Image (cartoon, rainbow, N blue to C red; front, side):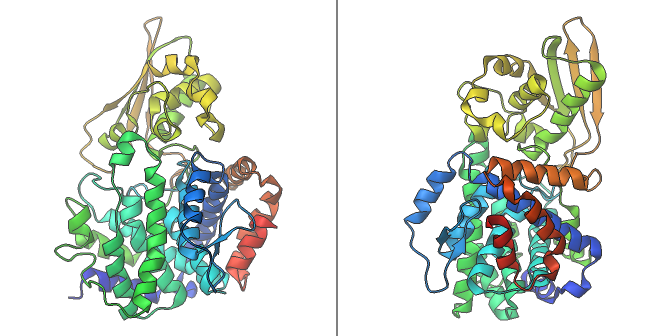
Length: 455
């Protein structure tokens, strides 16, 4: 039996636009639109300018002209470094889409790598670009779906690099041999620690950035003829053994039969850790349906699966950094009870140090409900104890933005509009939205995308 890397590579290289279901095609364009608008907003994120300052030290574009950067018209960097910056910006505000069962953010890495690759080696038409995106997401999410134990490493980066290599291989029509070698170098470069998550540091999006950059380098090495490890996925020291405690290889391989994983991706309606979304919506429901307010609330408990408690159950603290606050439901719940929702502007110094929000946050906790599923987001329950002694609750059985509760087209476009406004590109909203309705018809996807984004 061929090893898992060979099976993945065969799948990736065989994908063609004509074979994709209309819904798969639609979701690819939709989530690419979502991701690029989020990336433009990310140009205004905390540390984004600092990251760019560092990247400028790494060299100037070569003869290929380099790659362009979201939200920074006219700027070009060497393609791997453009992928680095774009991936950082897409994930920097925790607003990028997510594959919940895989616990991975596939578009932040894959879309960034594809944009940079298309800039340096294109042109590629829209159908080819979107097909490559589907191939990359299949690999990222498939690796996550193979896991049977709790998250150990930062999977959006560790699995993300393999998805990027897969997408580039499909886009460029690489040979099986070259792609297998590139997977081997993806294994060599793969990294991503959850310590950054524990501490709430900007290292999380930087790890995603590193995956996107290193994927281009892995492909370059393979194309130059360097042989890489062939057992990159299920070898004794391959990806699954190295980064995951337990796995079932059949879950990875059986998933290649369909549907494509892009159809299983969820929007993020709020710029926070996805694990907080159910709790945010539950708090809004308690306010709307049960009359809960910051004044009459004594305590709010969100009882949820272990993954939720682990990812967003951290305590609030003074002088929170934005990266910490986005993963702290106590803070996020305080924002919701103060102004009804959570948006991109809620992570500046004024809000982060608001004493009223801090007071509410001290009354909010997340509890582990003992669910045995290590990747479960639901079911969960929000329980509000009021100052008059009453207790009211709401149950959460689905995540807003998930395939079972998707954003409407209007909600999707409104999110895109808010991102472009935050990034200073609101004037591009209508043209950008129109482009992604017709991207499959474009003969040069990268040129069309950048023309819409930058004018």
